[in-house]
Structures are given as structure tokens and as C-alpha cells.
Image (cartoon, rainbow, N blue to C red; front, side, top):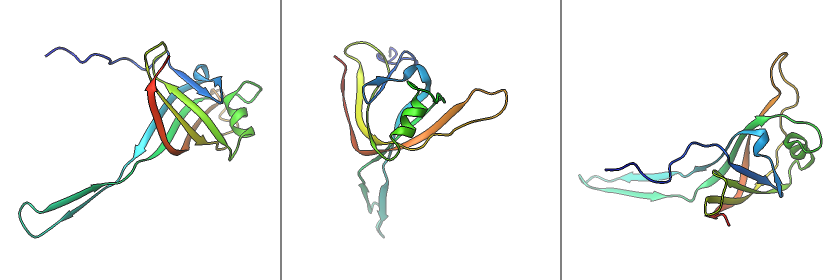
Length: 136
């Protein structure tokens, strides 16, 4: 069987937040669903009932902590508690998979350790569910 088409290394991505491109500041950007499954076993050998709940999404991101104009850390601080419109496209170009969603801005870290890059790592709650599509 041949290898599956469409697999690629995560690089040359697009991460647009409120119409500003921030991929050059990020090292990680991913949507993660939390989708509980409830299972009930009954007293008969094949008696299993399962139900899948609706997913709750989180947008995980890590990257450089840039605290000046044009920096994502500054933009997140300015928007704290507000809604952000985000588009995540794992591979640049037309006809590529995209996810568009709304997330709640949280405060990023400020500062760091001597001799180390200033970084930030956040898990932003997503409002509702992402809309998946293709880039144009």
C-alpha cells in the first residue's frame, strides 16, 4: 500500500489573529478537542451503550514573547478577555486545509529567565466550534 497523500511537516503555516499574521512569532499552533465518551456496561455479555459528547475546543500556542507594537504578546494583553477571530492554516497556499474560529484572549507571560529567549505558552478557550474549510 502506498503512503497516504497529504502528509507534511508542520512548517510554512499561517496563523492570522484579527487579520494580523503571527506565524513568524509562533513555534506551536494547534486546535485540541476535548470530547468525552460515556460508556455504560450492562449485565449481558454484549451489553454496552456508548454516547459521544460534543467537543469543547482549545487553541494551544507557544512562541516568542514580543511585547511591543506588532507583537502577539502585546496584542493579547490589549485584548485580554475579549474575542479574537483566528484562522489557522497548517500549510500555506491555495486549496489547503483551514480552521476559522473565535477564541477568548488571555494574558500572556511577561519576562523570563536570564540568557533565555522570552517565550509564551497559552491555551485559549474557543467559543463554539471551528469552521473547517479550504484556503482560496
